[in-house]
Image (cartoon, rainbow, N blue to C red; front, side, top):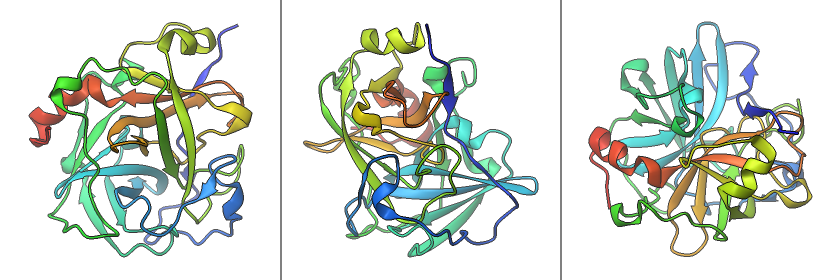
Length: 260
């Protein structure tokens, strides 16, 4: 039986002018992850996306002084986005920036294909230092690299379990990329522009992690953007799905000028 996919996008009860302070147990975030150390993931940002009178939370990755990469479904129907930089504790970012919908560029073939769940956000110039820095993309010569069996890291402020409130402390999990053939056993046919990871013992992504980074452990490169997991439960051992960055390197270059 094929599982249903769910996009990992929680709505907050009302529009927020600052990040909500949520009580959390840092050892249980992102479903069986571990607490990030301060400065461990300097390229991650928190995104508070405004849609009318509602707000929703996602993650993103700094790829340049003026560009953040995230999931397209995070940016559907929004009016503005607040970007939180340099946070390990979600409510204590070093600074934030607000940009309008005119600075959001979704993939032109979203939402027609789950593998095109990717968007760019243009920002004012942001300087880099130890707590705020970019993550490199794979090189253009790596377009066809699949990264199967690669050890990867993903982080976020997503829910601790199905339906839980958003936590406060950044959590990470170490996983491994699996083949799309293995992933299709759970979800049916998937485009090559989807990258999947195994989720042993329920170590996975959850609501609120959408848009966040999937980065190789050795020679860190951003290879995935958090997209979906098993609709039945974040604690499922079914694979987790990411947008494959190597499938979109040319689009990223055309829009932002960022390339390696």
